[in-house]
Length: 510
Image (cartoon, rainbow, N blue to C red):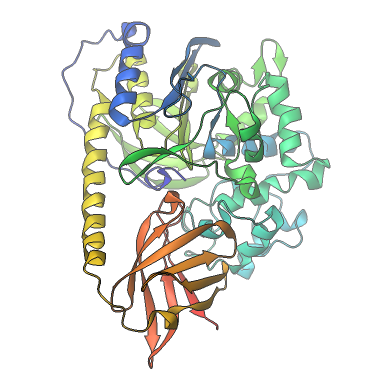
């Protein structure tokens, strides 16, 4: 989820070519990368990062930069853990493809063969959805649809799957791609049915351990227990701030893994070497090939050098072309973390970038810089170009927020007595939410499935309230209440696009 709302839609970014350094870029990696990364950490306000490049089966560079936690002198190294977010999906898809090779399932089997209780609001889609549909995001859901209900909540995996039946899909079944985290959870829950082992145990025994990824964690609940780990950071009122780890084991097969540059190098090397570590076949080649087969069109993308091409989703991977080379790639983002994994199979090149703040696009810029160096393209300083765009967007958001805060400062009264807004509200998908009275005319919202999070509402006049969340990940918003015949009947709740695009309408029930 990263700034994920920027990652999984068709992105059009046009950048001008900066002064070229000639076509020989071979020295950039060896001589200039450290300077480039360290400068970027300062400019982007990134506490720590880890970068790894593998080429022809060997590690070219593997380094930690910066610190694990703001204000602490604890340096990142190659074994320091970062949450990798949606880069988890490639592990889940690969595991499912491995089970197909073993003859334990077919990716074209219906989901209900293994999860009889699986249902969708579109009855036909629920009956016909295959494992492949889950792994390539074509259930008909809009990107991130349902994630406010599913992400960082107290719901169990089985409860999330049950609630999927309450999502009113935005599109007809198999007609449009829409990034669906809960679908990967459903796929992961098939693993214990066919193997007798949970998703996390299967990954540890069949991928992590055989590849030597001994520090990698499958579950977020284990991250705080690690000794060599980063801390997540975000921007709060313009200040870089350490925040709590998100707890997303209810969606684990979609985004829960934490790993290091060292461990991820082993994953990348194996995937670029047809699944082998040395002479030992760890991942069947057929499984790797299955994940890279084009499945669903995402949209048209304009590369940073002006090239234009289509982006396609495989199984757990985005597929696109760049400089006449096929890229196999994915980005990941959860509270306080952003990461990217890029494979260029034809060049036997892999690039891994991990960061511990969710307010940067440096992880995106750096991968193109590294690829351009290997492809002997002119130097463009993508980091600075991304940064200029990022700052402009941030300034616009800050100005919008300031106008709302200025309106709050005018002390405008709500249309009704504040007590008339209080009570219990219900949304069919999410569940219940309660509104209580705070100081003056302020209100407070608490959500059934986010017990550690609340929203503070301040009147803007009329029936509109300016909203800040105790967890900054959920952003800032304006919530309008619906009033009919002098009585409050509903409220529209909207969290940050980072979590979900769609608003939720809660009806007042008492």
